[in-house]
Image (cartoon, rainbow, N blue to C red; front, side, top):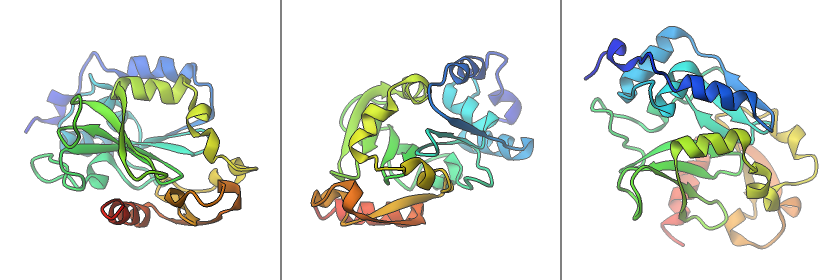
Length: 219
């Protein structure tokens, strides 16, 4: 296992990420993280800060995009207690045990989950896959983490989610923590009503994950 000094790079990807932050075309929150928590997270992950994923884990508690609609995991913070290692239930060998063969890196208010392919899905290793709440199927975004992160800052997130936005969604979503999601009923995968007509409640993201995995194995 590499030490923290071996994982910290003089050529940190954070320099590039700061450029993306300055060009962000939507509201973002960079969650603060204390040094001890950041160092522990980096050692748990065994990822260098030369990579964008390692830089995010070391420099942030996570990042909330577009009024907290989209959440990228980091080292954890009071507004999002989950870290990359804790949410993925990493073992002592830095293996993700929540989703075998993949690392969960981000999620959204709808209960959609983003993961890096490490062999769990057919397709290119290292690409980002999305577990869509309306289909309960993993879909490739055909891009690696770096491109996905850049898209979150400067891309058209609205277009990606436009059919799931409701009137005054910003006010509702911006008050939700990074450890919570919206539970819609009827469920989004039933396709019975528009999002506007469905009832909504705020629930822990763990509940959404369990519900999603349970139902995806049935459908």
